[in-house]
Each structure stands twice: as C-alpha cells, then as structure tokens.
Length: 114
Image (tube, rainbow, N blue to C red; front, top):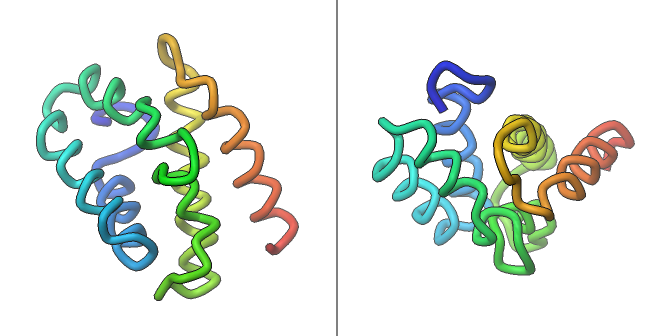
C-alpha cells in the first residue's frame, strides 16, 4: 500500500512466503495486489476482507498450517509481515474485526519463539 507502512516489497515478500505455506492463498493475494495495487484505498479494502483475516481458510490462518514447505524462520517472518499489515489496516477505516486478534497472536507467538 504505497506511501504507507506496508511497502510494495513487503507485500511481495508476503506473497513469496505465502507461496511456501499455501500456494492458493498466494495466488489470491497476488491477484488482489495486481488488481488493486495502483489504488491504495481499493487495495486496503481488498486486504481487509474475510478471505485475508477470517476463518480457517483465511490467509492469516495459514500461519497455523502444519503442511508447509516454509522453515520456522520463514513462518515467523510471515507472521511479522502479517502483523505489520494488520496494524496498518487497523489504523484505517472500518477494519475487519478479526485483525486485532491476529495481530496480537502473531506478535505473541513471535515474541515467545513459537
């Protein structure tokens, strides 16, 4: 989201890491960035969706995926990037109600070394 806390390179890294964890979610996120990347408001709206932060099939929930090719360090980096993205979205208008819980969980897990 250009000009804000989460850079294009951070989103691209998030997509790369997600590709190791859940390729289908990586494809979805790639499509969102491609479709809305030039419009910060539209991209924020897309990244605020339940597909990103909702239930068991959300992008956020992929941090819990036991069937992953990602290393522990890559999963921690994924959680850190998701926490940064979530914090940015929380500062915007009408954030998804699940974001604050995920940001807290990601931060706690990374701090505890899980």
